[in-house]
Image 1 (cartoon, rainbow, N blue to C red):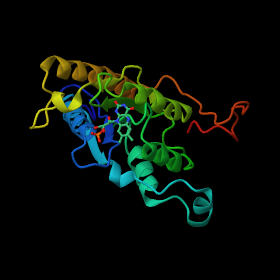
Image 2: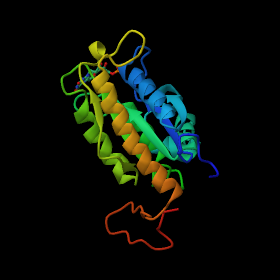
Image 3: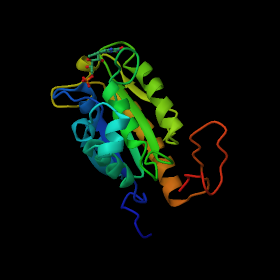
Length: 219
Ligand SMILES: Cc1cc2nc3c(=O)[nH]c(=O)nc-3n(C[C@H](O)[C@H](O)[C@H](O)COP(=O)(O)O)c2cc1C
């Protein structure tokens, strides 16, 4: 079948990045592991770094006078080239890092709005026993508001420094298998939606805004 790879999967393009700027980021290491696993599962990967998307603090005066900064424009470009995206995000004070929210805010005024209708899976890594999972719940809010289809299952790596080996693998085979199984289920949904569309979701920005040709941003 046209576009189908030798594992029988239709082409699915996935943007993968970690929302940490630091060199030795545990979330970047987890994002790399996920990208490799997704590639083995038949996805085409675009691996990005947060540095490419980082932007100055949102300021509407700057938006009005200078437009949207290069980092947010790059995030939009990479999202538009993908069917789905995977973010490995640290947890800062029980929420997502401010610079990730800032990049989401800056990218959201683009039309078509680039998060709308795109599938997303969330990962986190943290030294804590909770693995940064609370931060992912906060990250779901803006992404779902913007119409991203955030996969219900999330993957949080607890005690991350000890769970990541020096050569960038997960120390536990069982944990690795759990990650691969979740990524595989996610990819199945993305592939089905990309190649066998059966449902459309209209994104409505404000409560009370009625879907109509003028307000619909489903396309
Ligand atoms: C400002 C700040 C707040 C943090 N808050 C939390 C937190 O609420 N929960 C948690 O598990 N870790 C927290 N941490 C620790 C991070 O999980 C840890 O630094 C982690 O390694 C960051 O991800 P990275 O390795 O990808 O950079 C915090 C770190 C910083 C710098």
